[in-house]
Length: 135
Image (spheres, rainbow, N blue to C red):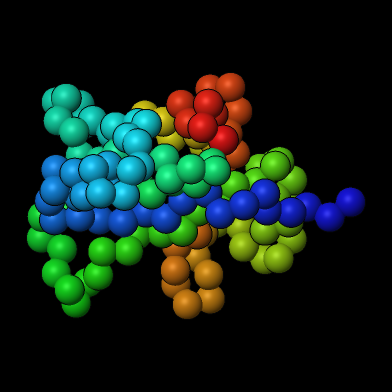
């Protein structure tokens, strides 16, 4: 049996204006905020938008993001079985990662880079994941 990716889960972006970004994607595009990221002081620094069909866009506040740095953060794929896919990644020769839960969204995840240095996230939604109802 071949270990496969289930689908594109989300892309992660930075934004200079979290409120304007939320307004654009909620009011104009019709997406729904389904999770917010808050720091220890209770300040909101990001959110997950559900785009339909179990796909999301994740935004994080970055006030100093310039055009030369870009605003793209990473691309994420959802796996049916994260442990099996992690074994496939290790067999490919990429071993510098740890499967863990997201601090606020409780999603099982791990990160590595593609040959061009693009950060790739692999995740799996289980019953602890706050996004499970949308997948």
